[in-house]
Length: 101
Image (cartoon, rainbow, N blue to C red; front, top):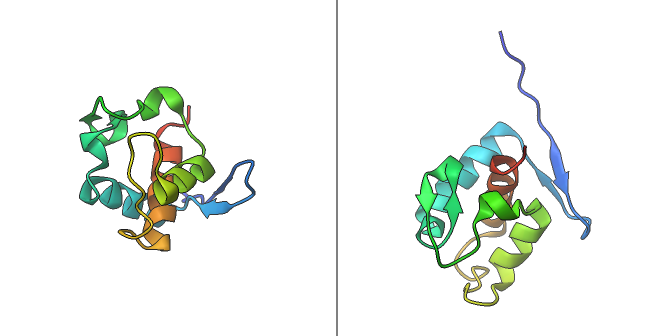
């Protein structure tokens, strides 16, 4: 029988984003539904986007993902008016967990 482990991902900005399995699963849904795979490569999502950074190579922290999703920048639009704070935190947890090695 396995044991579920919940963690917290925190980056330089000090934001703590829970990485429990339910949050990560919700983040995978947000990644799909928000269309992130259109622009980003992420092996866990089986996406091969070429417009935005390759997330597997970049391996961003959850803080960095949340900040970028909220504010946008470069070619990426801001999603703070399209996603709830809970959705932003979930997708940040998903990307951070999916790219950890």
